[in-house]
Image 1 (cartoon, rainbow, N blue to C red):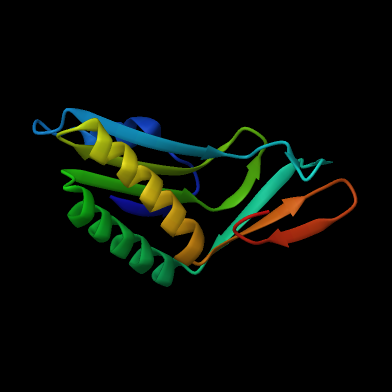
Image 2: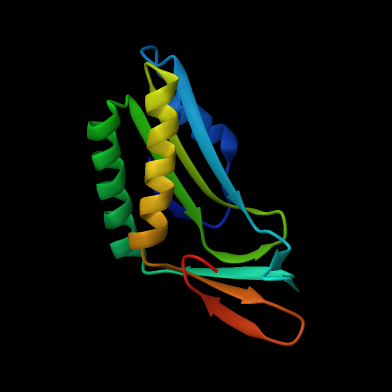
Amino acid sequence: MIDIVNEIDLNVAYKHLRDPGSGAISLFLGSVRNATKGEEVYKLEYEAYREMAMSEMQKIAAEATTKYKLQKTLIIHAVGEKQVGDLVVVIGASAPHRKDAMEATKYMIDTLKQTVPIWKKEFFENKQVWVSENP
């Protein structure tokens, strides 16, 4: 399952990843934190080039499936305005064994941050800043 949504539903994610051949399901959940570089963040805004982002996310999932022998994968990213604590990305993998599932989720989030055209704007008290992958 690959998607770009306004709100993420974890129940949908878990149901998608369940598989009778999987003994492990690994999830990475990314949320809005309240500070960057010592400055208080009060909200974020995400934008995506949807067609290209979906294509890149499909590519990442396919690569992870082959590399880690996965049963199922999941990449869901939220767009729009998000408040501190809101869920903004879910990466998931199911596999026969936990090592593959856990390594796959790390691979997928790291690759997503480097290659997928999704942009984040941080809102501070007196400024707004578009940020790169590693703030």
